[in-house]
Amino acid sequence: CGVFGVFGHTEAANIAYLGLHALQHRGQESAGIVTSDGEGMFAHRSMGLVQDAFSAEQLGKLPGRIAIGHVRYSTAGGSHIRNAQPFAVDYSRGSLAVCHNGTLTNADELRAELEAEGSIFSSTSDTEVLVHLVARSKAVAIEDRVMDALSRVKGAYALLFLTADTIVAVRDPRGIRPLCLGILPSRKDAHVLASEPTSFDLIGAEYVRDVEPGEMLVIDAAGMRSIKLPVDETPARCIFEYVYFARPDSKLNGRSVYEVRKELGRTLAREAAAQADVVIPVPDSGVPSAIGYANELGIPFEMGLIRSHYVGRTFIEPQQSIRHFGVRLKLNPVEQILRGKRVVVIDDSIVRGTTSRKIIKMVRDAGAREVHLRISSPPTQWPCYYGIDTPTRRELIASSHSVEEIARYVTADSLGYISLEGMLSAVTRIGDKSSDPDEGHYCHACFSGRYAIPFSPGPEGAAPA
Ligand code: 5GP
Ligand code: SF4
Ligand code: MG
Image 1: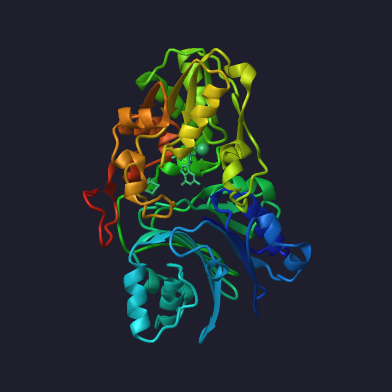
Image 2: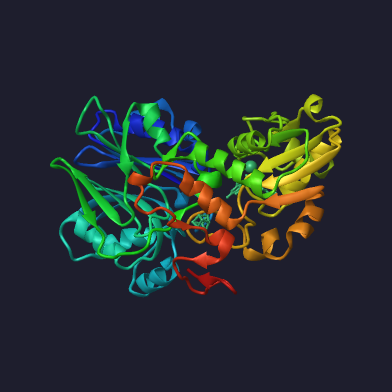
C-alpha cells in the first residue's frame, strides 16, 4: 500500500490526490482521502485507481488544510470497499482517521480480545484494531493515545493518523515499510509525508528525510516534533522495496532505487554470466537491472518485450478459447530483436513461475535460439508477513523446487539468481554511507526465512533473525 499526508495547505485534498497518483504502483485496489477543516472530517473512498476514484466534484467536497490518503492492495483483509482506507470514526474525543502500509502480525489476537470486550468492527482489516486501541486509551494528547495503542501492536507499519488539527506519522521500530518527510518550499509550515519521495516531485515539495525506524512525528499548528518510540530494535528495512516494489525514481534511505537495481544487475552478471547476443528486461521492474547486467558483460541491451500500459486490474478473465492471450495483453515480443538470438531475460523475481513460463514461451515463439533467465533477487522461498502480498509457502515455486527444477518448469535453457550476499552487498554499495548509520540492516525474510518479528502460528521451518 501507499500512504500520503499533507499538513497546512489550502488545497490539501488536491495535493493528496496528486500524491496518491504518484504512489499508484503501490496499490490499485482502492483509494481514499480524508480531510479536516478543523471542525469536521470529510472522507471519500472508492474501489479502483486514483484517477477513477475521485472526480473534481468529489475532491471539491473535501475541504480543509489537512489530509491523509491511501492506495491499497490487500495483504490482510479482503478486497472490499469496507476495507478501503483511510478509516475514519467519531468517538468520545472527536474525530480520528488512520491509514496504514504494512501488516500487524498480532491483529487477530488483539481483535479477538477487543471483540470479547464488546468492540464492534466494521471491516476485516488489521488496521481497524488501531482505531479501537487509540479510542480506548486513557491518555489525553493524541500522541500519547497513539503511543498507548502502538505499545500493544506488533508488526510492520508506516502509519498516518489524522485528528481535527493534527497529523501523527509513525514508522515501526524496525522501519520495515518506508515513510518519508517533505516540505512545500512555498509555505514553510506545510509538511508532506509519503511512502516514497517520488510523490513529492509531482507536487513541488522538497524531500527532507526518511522518517526513522521507531520515530513518531507530530505535526500541528505549533509545528513539528519528533518523538522516539520507547523500544529499541535493530532496523529491518524491506529489501524487496529496492528489488521490485518502489518506483525506480524514488530514493529510500538515501539510496536511489534505480541505482540499486542497476547494481543488482551488475552483481548478477558477475555471479551468473550467460553467453548471449542480447539482454532484455521484463518491463518495467526488470529494466534497470537488465541495463546493469548488459553493461557488466558488454552484451547489447534491447527492449525485446513491450509492455502495454493500459492493462488495469479490472480486466476480466477471458473465455477459455482466448485465455492464452492473457500475458500478451500485457507483454508482446519484438521479433526483430529476438529472431535467431541467444537471449538473456532479466526479471526481478519468480513467485509461482507461471508468468516466467509464459514469457519464455513467448520469447522462443518469436524466434529466440536460446533463452537464459536471470533473476535480480534470490529465490523467493518464504511468504512476507510484513505488508507485501505473497502467496502461501506452498505456492512459492522456490520453496519446494531446486534452481534446476525451476529452470525446467519455466523451460529456460539456464536459470540464475543473485545470491543473498550479492543482493545485500549491491544495496549497501549504493548511496552515501555517512547518511546511513544502519548500513546492512535490511529485512530479507522472503529470501532467507529469517523473520525479524515472530508471529503465531509461525511458518514451518522459519528461522528467527
Ligand atoms: P511468476 O513467474 O512467479 O508467475 O511471476 C513473477 C512476476 O511477478 C515478476 O515479473 C515480478 O515482477 C512479479 N511480482 C513480484 N512480486 C510481486 C508482487 O508482490 N505482486 C505482484 N503483483 N507481482 C509481483
Ligand atoms: Fe520485504 Fe521480503 Fe521482508 Fe516482506 S519479507 S518485508 S517483502 S524483505
Ligand atoms: Mg515483473
